[in-house]
Amino acid sequence: MVAAAATAAVAVATVARAVNSAAVVAVVAASVANATKLNLEVQSGVRTTGLRFFVSPTLARADSPAKINLVQLRRLDQILANYGYCGRSEAKIWIRKGRVSVNGEPVKVAEKKVSPKLVHVDGEPIECPEGILALLHKPAGYVCSHDAGEGPTIYNLLPPRWVRRNPPVTTVGRLDKDTTGVLLVTDMGELVQRWTSPKHKVVKVYEATVSLDISPALVELFAAGTLMLQDEEKPCLPAKLEIRSPREAKLELTEGRYHQVKRMFASQGCEVIKLHRSRFGEFDLGDLQPGQWRLLPLPKL
Figure (tube, one colour):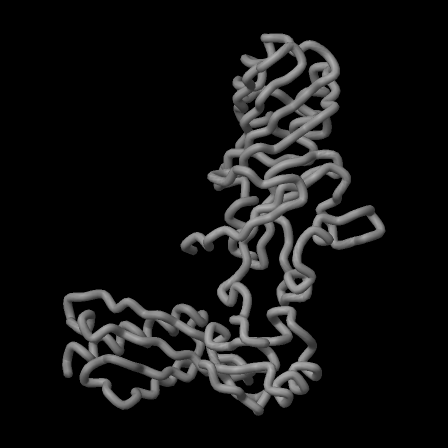
């Protein structure tokens, strides 16, 4: 019982931190002595969110850290709307028609709170309930914008439901309209921040074709970390340039400044006439063809 109580205390403290120290009221369910299940109700401001977590009995020891699996319960109509299936009003119609089930059982009440992982629509589970991360082989001629007025958009290449999610998918950084290659899309702001923040120095590899023969002196210049671009206050960080032919090169960067590759070559009198990103961090295209995408496993946050 002491071990179970200790585990419960750790669990409550963990949830309190997870909701930014909101008021936490713990309601201990049937078998606290075995620490098999705890129900928490977390009240923050005027809204109440139901959370449930489970603790393995084998971990209910005072000398073992509790491993807690948090699952947020949400209304069915909210789940269908937030995951891009339909609006909340239409969701109620879907539910009444029996198109939605929970744990294999049809439900009729839109207000029922469940885990998105347990929900099926037309016999299929909710798509990517924990979040979307996908790799797109961006073709030339597409912009990384939601504004169709700027031209064909990369979001036209993705499932429409992804764009209807709340939050919708967005690109991790951008590629120019005429640039091709690796482009990550996600609906998780934490991943966008992780991979676009300058402090993380994510490696990006580009294949460039330029208008003039590339001077071997550029290898040393780009690596020196002294190259200043127009209207910039700081020099570019060291970059690795590999000349592959007189007018073709591979460039490895850890920055993501505006039009950086094109501006680096332009500062030396070379116009980039073709640009392809072959790698972003640990991700490459593999056998993906232009316009195709594939889902990626979510990294640990």
